[in-house]
Length: 269
Image (cartoon, rainbow, N blue to C red; front, side):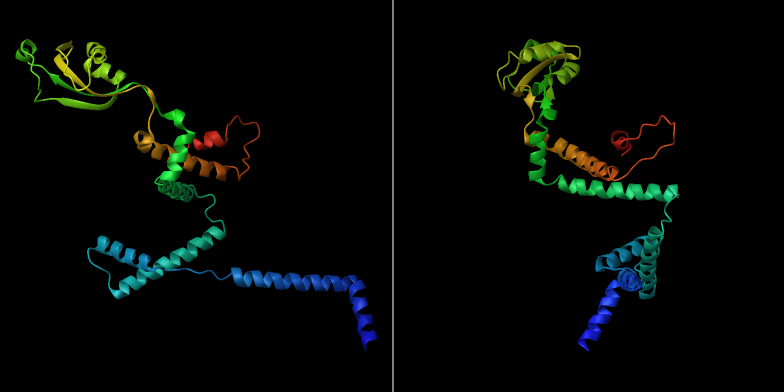
């Protein structure tokens, strides 16, 4: 009996047709297992979706939906997810410029929201600041108060100014445009918190008081934080889009002089 079994086993091993049958059977089993698992997709309706649907219906119709109306809306949500996913599987979005534009905007919105969330992470933001400190240089900066003098105050200077306006962290260039050259020249001679003597400007006589002076240098993390968050989010989005671009080969018409690369594509983000 054992010899007979060994005989048939050897024949199966040596027979090419047997190999074909075994391979075909294994392929059929794998194909069936794949399609039995891949053919069933789950559409999940979460409590938050139901709550949002109620809010949307109330906002649109002016009153909360009835049980029947809400059931109809939820059915529509489920069907929309099913058929939209099926359309994407079949590639039906291809060739539809309006749909492709909408999908692109949805993706950009998605990565932008992620980038804004990341930009609230102080550790990530501080690391970004250390890497790009050179971007955040600032010129000489002044914080000061000024007061337009009446003719009487010009003749008889007073020690306190009731109606004064103040500027915080303003550059020398901005002061030149706002208060004139003589005002800027007078800043260097002033002690902190001391009112100047009357200064003639194109706008009339004024007195100024320097509250703070910051020599040209690099903004502190705190000073640059708002701009840092903006720049970090922008660079984060660009890096994600650049990673997507690298996954594609771009085929252009033969003989065309188009320039399409990562840089030009990111200019369209």
